[in-house]
Amino acid sequence: MLEALAQSNDLDERALALASLHLARGEDPRVRRFLAGAITHLDSLDDAVRKRWSIALGFVADRYRQRGDPGRAIATYRKALEIRPNEARVLLNLGLAFADAGDFANAIERYRRSLAADPAQPLAHVNWGIALEALGDTAGAVAEFRRALAVDPNEPLAYFNIGVVGLARGASREALEPLARAAALDPGLAPAHFALAQGYLLAGDARAATRELRLGLDFDPDNAAARQLLEQIERATGGR
Picture (cartoon, rainbow, N blue to C red):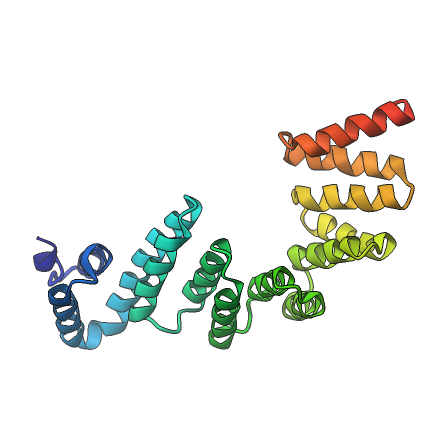
């Protein structure tokens, strides 16, 4: 049935059938020969079908990532890249899947390739920096976060991660400015408010810390650690 649909005149139908075969039985030598033959007969439809095929596989891989199954996500993103090897979004998401699996070296390589295909991706730099930080290269991580800001000066996650690195170094005052910028650019970024609260506490400003905790809890009301910290501050300050 799928093999018949893979020869349909409807581009969406054909691409979905090819993607389904590739996903379900792409390791079968006979199926691989069929897929290779189908590609050779695409002619003028090659780019249109490949694009749809890759998108379909990428969508399935995204779902695997969302379900916490990086192994299947990695395998499926790789299949998508067999069809369109330089697809920047797929390369980025493959990197994220490797990071989910704790394989930061492979994640970095995919971020590098994604940026080579499309340099205008601040989040690729942000995630590259997060991977470097996980590998213990804090200076390299900050450099990547700053490269993200060179691409987009209004990327809140770049400011947020610069601030978090500052907090981790014990430089609370140094961390406040980028964290405040992150929260201003994306008021719904609850972790930025919580990190700001930590910075204000370290700087001795309980009132500002209370404000940021309340703002963060507006967007993440189930954060037990933040709520507990807010209650502790309110008890210590009499709710002021």
